[in-house]
Amino acid sequence: MINVFWAFVKKEWYHIIRDKRTLLILFGMPVAQVLLFGYAISTEFKGAEIDVLDYAQDESSVQLIHHLQSSGHFTLHNILTSEQEMEKGFKEGTTKLVAVIPRDFDKELFNGQPITLQLITDGSDPNNANTLVQYATTMLNDFQREQLSMRSTPFQIRVESRMLYNPQLVSAYTFIPGTIALILLIVCAMLTSLTIAKEKELGTMEILLVSPLPPLVIILGKVTPYAVLAFIDAVLILLLGYFVFKVPVLGSVALLLFCCLLYVLVGLSLGTLISTRSSSQQQAMMSSLMGLMMPSLILSGFIFPLSSMPGILQLIGQIIPATYFIEILKGIMLRGVGLQFVYLEILVLLGMVMVLLAFAWKNFNVRLQ
Image 1 (cartoon, rainbow, N blue to C red):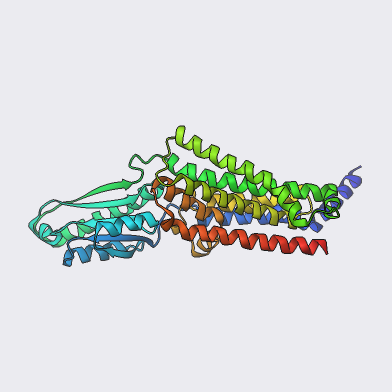
Image 2 (cartoon, helix red, strand yellow; image 1 turned 60 degrees about the vertical axis):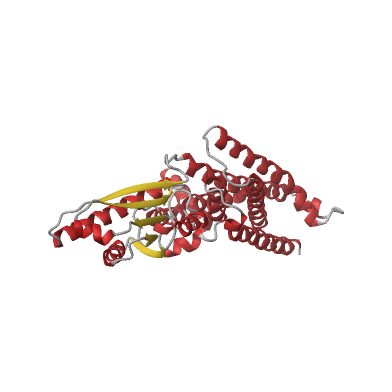
């Protein structure tokens, strides 16, 4: 009996070794997850870009700006000259933190008067905003200690922080846009890939293909109901966020719904592409969940800011549709921006739809031949 048992174990062992998909799940996924989480999940900032609104423009303010960059946590993105420039940067999403240096900074420093420095951040991402303020406050305190050691006149630098678009730091303002992006992408891609893979698995796809209907009409007919249902999902989540969690919609509702529809088309295009590469529902589901859910959750800026990740992960994040859709949602819903501030993200999503459909159509034609 023992010999039979070991023979059976040996047979299973050989079966596992020969199955590349099983080996990938056993060894590839754990290694990928450890590396991904290890590099992506970080609360430490390196090279975060900040702007400075320098009203003083004197020697001490220049020293302060250099000191903010000395730790390597911050890099100077731009020196602003007016509040209008600051507001434009926040609405465009290029500005995350602005340090406002008051007038007569050098004079007050030498006279030993209390000085108030203002840190203004984009509160649409509360975790990111809090971390930036904490780092900047630490650097300002270090600057104060250095200056006190070199001066005989005591003084005090007081830091005043202000969170734009989310002064109460409500976490729902971050999680509702991210949840919309994640749910729509997974639902659209997974359901679309499953329905077409099911037809191929049951052998009914060949029957449909020999029917008088063109292949494009068949695919569109399969995808259209899911497009409608996914769009209804998007509207439902937006309503829940607005009425239950009090997440505002400060921008154009029509523009917001158009962007949701465009993002749904991206998800459906991804699902169609996955279905052309999958031979079974199980393979389609694994590809949809593992290939889309984890990258969209971690590398889109939904939970962890891209700026704190290594360069290679930031590049990967730039090809994830959720990265652009989350930025669109935060811009329209929380910052109240219009088309002129999100048109680049819209063009990227539109380009993704065209590229994904082109690849899906190419793969579908290859299978027909």
